[in-house]
Length: 202
Image 1: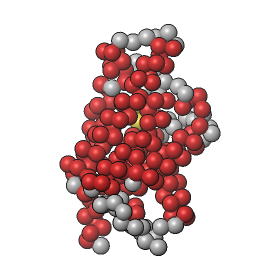
Image 2: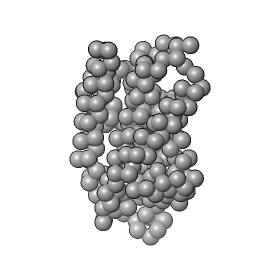
Image 3: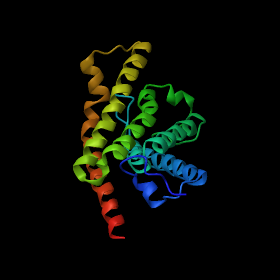
Image 4: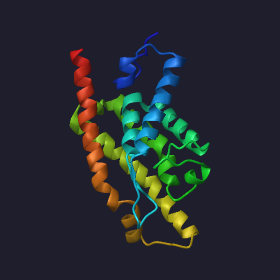
């Protein structure tokens, strides 16, 4: 059967595959986790921080927008489970439970929540239909990642005997990543509305 229109807007993936089934949902969850794993292989380590520049946040937010809040959340939960089991899906081809509990663990654990938030913004407001709306959804998703990731990074470093003041924390976990986040948000603001326009022409 087709997906019921219980929300004002249906995400892209559910529009392309409207017949809801367990197989469809599991397939989208797997594809979403694999997309994030693929983009996570784009990783640039920085010498002054344990947080690398990666492509995985772009995948997180795109998956949330394309799959919606429920499936986006589950896709990123599956991604975390894959990594915790040791599969090389995290940044730079790493994996393992120690990675989830390490200095970047707060960012990783925030992935399902960020995907769920972006998916909810799409379902409620249709923000992925236009560039400015998509840009806003991506920036809000990124903000949630930092809201959870930065306190975790501070606590982890403090536990390792490297307590930081706020300025140093932001210099290690926020400021170097803002340009890349803006580029990724802009890329999403091109990709998602373009996909909708192509779908409309079809």
